[in-house]
Length: 253
Image 1: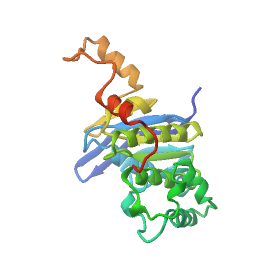
Image 2: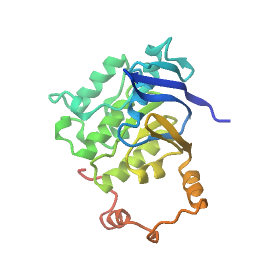
Image 3: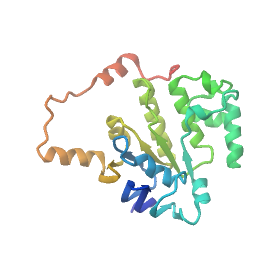
Image 4: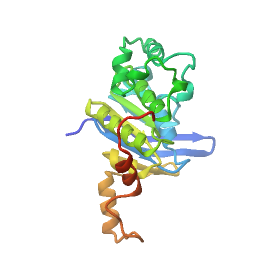
């Protein structure tokens, strides 16, 4: 039986008369990659920010690894890693110095080079974040979520703006993090990304969860209902062609 590591019950978030999150409930299982998807304004970012202790809820209950958000929010912070925006890194510090800085904030002793090696950035250890390419910045941003050795990490659209090679490489990194025992919560607007990475997804719209299941089951249910694509689906797509021709090795992404 899978262990529930995040439990959300009847969560509500109001902004005046506007209800951004409308009494939603869901569980996230330990060791899975869980996707929270939806159009802009669906309420997914608000939901995650509440779980991350970054935004106050109006009502409902949230438990993270058995810890009650209402009673011990500081304890929840110790167990989670939240992806930082690359614009938030101090531009005058190199990657090693940044990791040591964040380690100090968490009161954690961390080996910067070992952490950079996990995300294939050890050769950029003395570079400043502004000197990194888009893919490298995203990998470093994910590295910062691992500094406090969290049980759960939250990744907000981690591959937006990346080329196909960098996207696939980041997918591999996220899978490796999960294999190491960390639960991953991800938001994305790329449906192929959710299909490839996520064990289960919750689709939100207008503040409500309208579907929660594995990607395969959702697709099978749609097809069983008589859905047909107007164009025949090919065995590969243009992104597959691009990757096949250019390779997936780590480059100056």
